[in-house]
Length: 543
Image 1 (tube, rainbow, N blue to C red):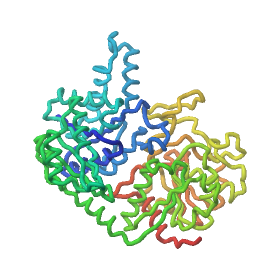
Image 2 (image 1 turned 30 degrees about the horizontal axis):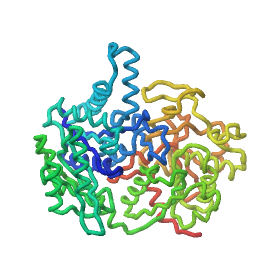
Image 3 (image 1 turned 90 degrees about the vertical axis):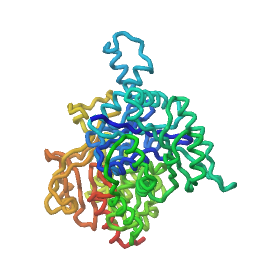
């Protein structure tokens, strides 16, 4: 089966939403019964996002097979309901790393290694490998046209049209069409310049998607089509909307999928977007409202918690509840106290690394526990809950994690010394080893405890959820903690690791070692987030 390729580039400015566009087009094509996949090509030199600061890059999305990837893969999974893998995302750094590895082994037979053809060939090979057995592959190119970092990727996708035939490739270019309030008009010149930049590289876009604060008029479309050498029906207006889940319908109404099918000579049924219609209906007809406080350390960039934010919204969609999220810097809680936590229907402590802001998180967990406020802890949020419980309920004031206090008296949380890497090989912790990739990563089986709230929410005995952490609960100290009303409601398959904890004498207090946000979708939601939002609705706020 020959694969058709759609390459998506961006111009004029960054952060236009190529990931959402790729995911939305994917959702429409999936609704037309096509077998599709989506890939993200990132131009930065890092091998993967695993060691990048969340306040610069946003969250690290973890795939089922344990790859640390760009957050756009989260959009892909949420929109097309397909599981992404390590083959759906790669960076310039990983490409150069692989080429240099081959050069050292002598695979190039002594040839001089160059960007063309060696780097571009490796890029093309990765694209073809990741698209194998799919009818259609959407490939998002990170960065903005004109950036020097993106040039090898753009050259590679230019070559693919030559290699595979132009009839098997579509280029979609996403641009900004600014609206000037002073003159009350849309300006098309930036789009023209961006397309000119692409043409200088040898790429003629087939479809232009024009982001704007207002609808792009017919006259403006005609002008863009004329100067950019595209069909007028291939100029798509994408005005700003209040929900990303409206975008598939907007693109479908402008027949972008019909254009793609005609170009590739694909016969497919009309897109059935009824599930997305239901999502929008639920979003616009929510009867209730709750305020959820996210107590974190990367709150200056909300994208650091992108999947958590979306999963909370999905919980709202399934319960017809509007979700207001209040971001609270845990360091501010340390300085200003619990007044920052007043008027919250629920408190969530997400994942994170390092000692900064930990005290503020402990204070937040204690406040939620003592005031009977629904609490949801994720990864670090579970570890913090155990530390707080040991310190303030059991009186073990020196209880802590060895991540924060290496020689603490009661190490409730300790470093993983051995784990299985993404290739299935056993790894042993080495102080002088690499930082990246040295974690428990990917999907793991969890066995739920009978008569627990977690089992009731999931509705089954065994679940699979995704992990990303270096520290685990110390089982030696666990039995003492359990006697004081803390239930271990989820354990690993070998019964040696703690996966979920609950407080028995509390309206709703659940914390998990894994990241449930990675498997939540707007169509299905996630049992833990749905349960959390239901509990938050029942919580009467008191200061």
